[in-house]
Amino acid sequence: MAGAKFPVVKGIRMRVTKTNFCGLPLEGPGNYTVTDGWISASLSPNMKAAEELEQTNAEGRVCVADRTPPERKWWDATLTLCNVDTCLIGMITDWPMIVDSEGNVIGFGDQSEVPTDTAVMIEIWAGASQASDCEAPENDDIFDAGSEITGRQFGYFAFLLKEATLGDFEIGAQVSTFTLTGITGSFAQWGRSPFNPIDIDGSGTPGRYLEEPDPDQHIWVQRTPISPPDVTDGCCYLAVQSVTTPYFGETAVAVAGDQPDCDFEPEPEP
Image (cartoon, rainbow, N blue to C red; front, side, top):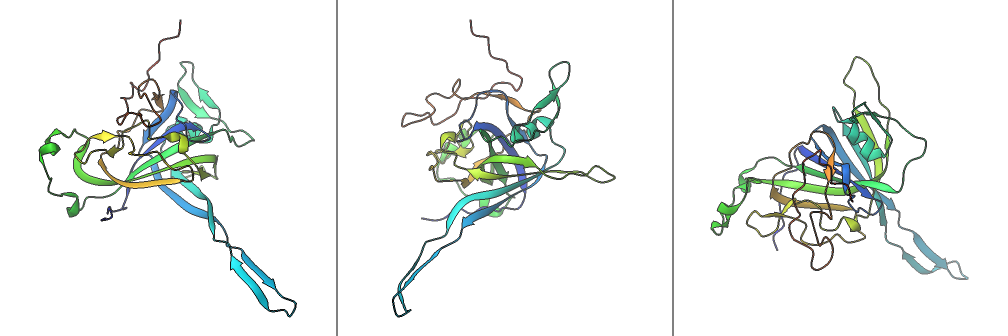
């Protein structure tokens, strides 16, 4: 089986989605955004070191020797942002939002405790054009592909970020950035995604993941020909179970429903 190849040269787009502690996407207003206002994203594995197990006999010689394998606990994550919507900072940190007289988010405030009941799913598209992107199609199905297929291949990276905190920032005669740090976690309840980031049939049909993530999994990396989503105007209404049903299980739909307009407001229940 040949492995997929894609260049990880530059970050193109980042989508952030509010979830619960286990990665379940939360339907509601202001619960996802797409931005290009980021500088870098880094992940560093946090490992439990191998433990040497040794027992000596009465003569002082080693009679039993073994060791436990090293184990990944989580990944330490760092996001460096620039020129971003304030609602994005609030979504990642779960800090209180400051709104104007019309309810628009214009800032955020901090709090002493780091929230641990919520998290955000980070999706990143990366890559650069290369000649190998232009593979000869095997049939005419490529003509049915939508505008999401440009001929390019992208690197797609996803991970759940939790316990995020805002680091030092300086205001002065220089460009200021925001640095957020946190740790990854299991995103088993993300399921096959509320979006359509991958090609599900080899013919350019955008759809959900082909399988649900393993509970022990903390990152998802793959190649995709599906173009990154457009940058949104702030944080948007996230539709999950209202447009993608069934969401989980063997009968889950392969293609997620379309997201509503960013400022969508559902009809109040009678």
